[in-house]
Image 1 (tube, rainbow, N blue to C red):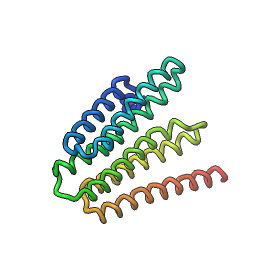
Image 2 (tube, rainbow, N blue to C red):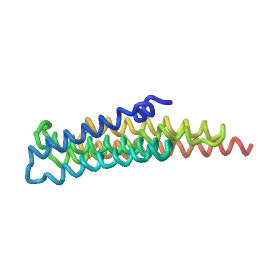
Image 3 (cartoon, rainbow, N blue to C red):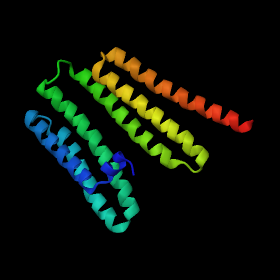
Image 4 (cartoon, rainbow, N blue to C red):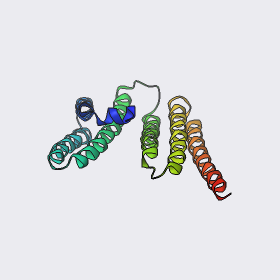
Length: 187
């Protein structure tokens, strides 16, 4: 089990994520009392998910494990979004709310790409595909990190170009390796 999978699978991870989400929701509600439903419904939705997960746990361990992973990832994504809203509300960064919104979306995309790249090699049905998917996974991890670093430090226009170049470049490398592997098998 990889470190990311072990972290997400931890029973404590969902509880910590839900608690952080509730704390962010309450903080944002205190700062912007005119929009309580916007913040609190986000936080409450994960707690409803936890209740459903507890019920699923009594019905099917496999279904509960899948739901646990999905809820934890959703909670992390929601925490990032509410955290960005909090940073914007407190004016902690010298940029506009639109910049923060774009950067948060890009970081969430990088997080999702990292999660997918982590799962890819485990989906192999044969040794031949194992190597291809492992290469694809590592290539996407590097692309996601370049994408995230670009969005963290570069101006928005440059960050957008860096992110696109990293992901398109990774996809071209993966496709090129697939074609080379296929060609070598035909010979």
